[in-house]
Length: 57
Image 1 (cartoon, helix red, strand yellow):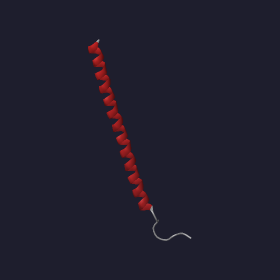
Image 2: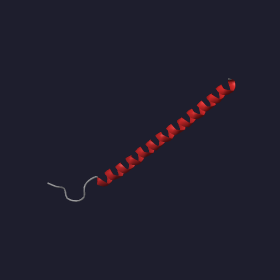
Image 3: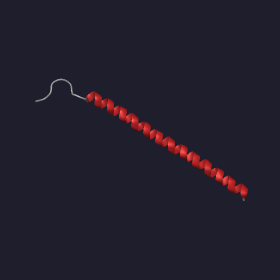
Image 4: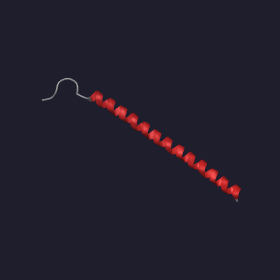
């Protein structure tokens, strides 16, 4: 026998899906920013190392 009235958790499921999507997007964005920062640090370190080698030679 089918239930009468509105479905049980459709609004909660939609809210949960929205929040989880927001959370995953935030984590993805933070991961990309961390990678970019690391690349910048690595480039700066290698540039410093290269300039150090050039001046000592």
